Length: 273
Image (tube, rainbow, N blue to C red; front, side, top):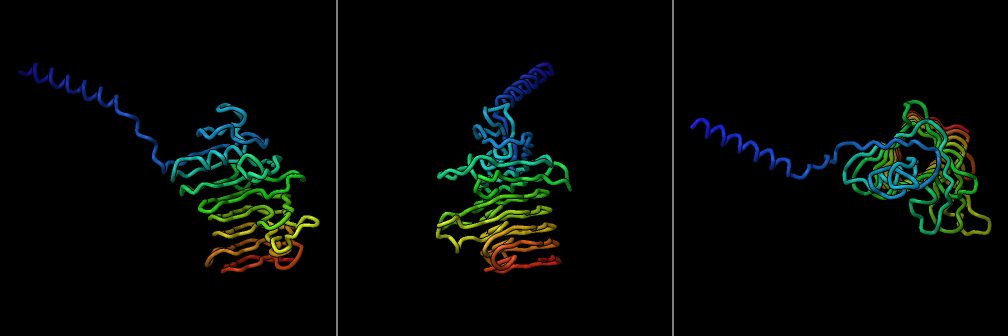
């Protein structure tokens, strides 16, 4: 009887092992952070959304900033994504087209899946610099409705948006989602109305045009320009903009370093001509 029991136990163990091997693999939990490291300074789109940051080919190509953001947009629901950028100069060169898709023009964070997308320098305290060529004529980044974004240790510099009609300003960033900026500086960004165009009422937010939720900390706004909101134009919901320990300096143009049509909190910050 003992041999039968051992034999039966062995058979049962083998069957259990076989059945466990036949089971499908359990997917990675959505709360496990996905980390994407940018390894190229060029401006080129992701080849295909396939969970691999790769320009020019499905895998094995350079991971550009534009490609990394495309992969973050296409990530699984509720999985946080961190995009790491070495502290260097990244210049956007692909001008916008009428389709306004992620392959051209400004960088678009469009995800509404609930996941936090973090963009930060690989070296805390050393900033990555994102800029555009002079003929680019678009802002640097648009954060769409429902997106949740944290940007840390980055400089947005030298973007120029010339509006040709009704539309949105925001020389560096147009925010419609939830955006947190930490140690993220804005230098020499601007919004203008193109010669002969009827768009003077839209030339708002030299650095940022905010329609969403915006939290800013330890950030400098220097030499940005617009007709209204030389640095920030805020027009979102209740207490949608909070600014802490930040510096506004030599922003020029029309009126108001900050133009506010909502509720705003400013704490321990300095504004200087």
